[in-house]
Image 1 (tube, rainbow, N blue to C red):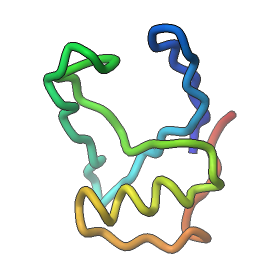
Image 2 (image 1 turned 180 degrees about the vertical axis):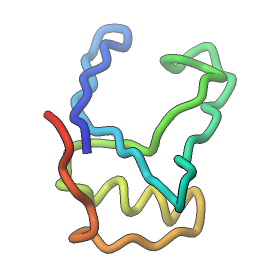
Image 3 (image 1 turned 90 degrees about the vertical axis):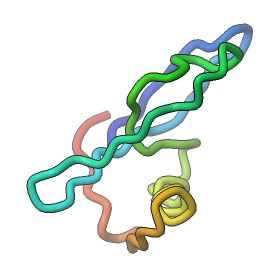
Amino acid sequence: MIQNRIASGEADFHGAKVALFIDDHILVYRRDNNPDIPFPDMLDLLGGGRENGERAAREAFEEFGIRIAIDAFEHAQT
């Protein structure tokens, strides 16, 4: 998991992005095409607030129906 900090408007976002590999593929999604969000209509990785992988695991299930055990996450870089 790579911690990331994105400035968006007045507030800074502190969180993490997760590269989820499935065989020889990496899971990405296209962000909503809403001009009020950072990076609209761009491809992105799973991510969320800093909660030791918990948020990313929840996102994987909510968005893609994929269940991932939190202990399956491997920290790659801060």
